[in-house]
Image (cartoon, rainbow, N blue to C red; front, side, top):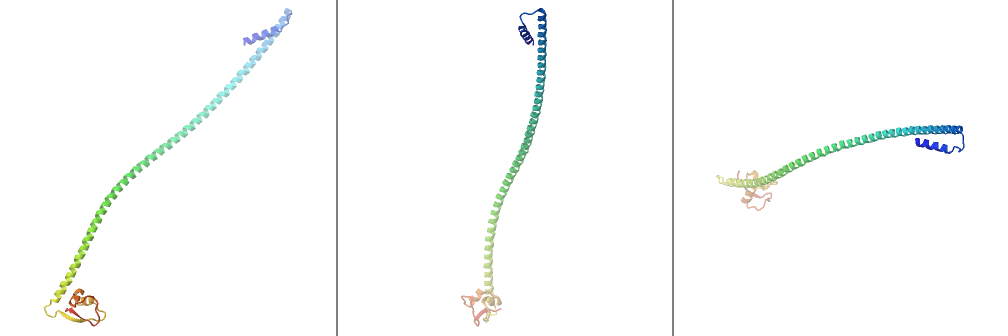
Length: 217
């Protein structure tokens, strides 16, 4: 500020005429001081205006900083909320994965148990099948034995029938329409094979009027 004042005084002094009276010099000095004072006032006004503008700018900058900070905090809060939401989703997903893994382990365990049961069942079925086959073989063998016993019984019955003590073991029978060896054998309590044997027959064919020898009842 003093630098500008000295420059102004020097400027106005240099512009003063060389030849002047003391009254004129005084008047000139007053004018110069007046101009200097006016210049100082203008400078002060400009300085005040500059300071005011600076304060306004500073206020706007602070306001913008506050606004920026608010936006920044809001953005940070939003991002934090998204991060927290993603974290919760991640935890939920991890829990689901853990639950799925447990179920998978349980399923594998169940499959293993079922596989063991299936193996045991297969072995049991194989044993049952073998036992059933043995029973079937035994049943077939028993059926064959029963058939042999039945035939032997019929033979023995025929022999016993032929060995009656009255001396007349056989009688004559004439074949009628509708007769067959089986029907005749049943009627006389014997069997077809025995009838064929005592009548020397090679086949079961008989004809109406044919004379057959049959056991006496």
